[in-house]
Length: 92
Image (cartoon, rainbow, N blue to C red; front, side):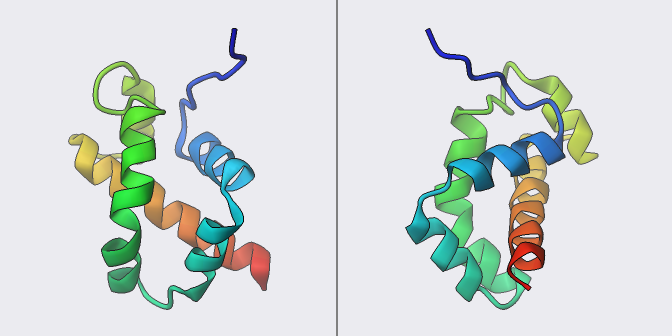
């Protein structure tokens, strides 16, 4: 049985993503210079994780609410941007 607990906040989701990211994802995040590039390159790999693993679409309304958005796609964008910004801060 898994001990995984769904993140209920953006901060919890960001922490889980960065703590469990493989080195390729972290390297790729580090190369992204602006938000346009971020969403072009990261919406697919991270968006899928947020949608499926964190169940933002169906069973995790708390996470969606914490993004301040009404639609899950918009909430996913908020989380991806937060992951990128935290990763950038920790690398400086």
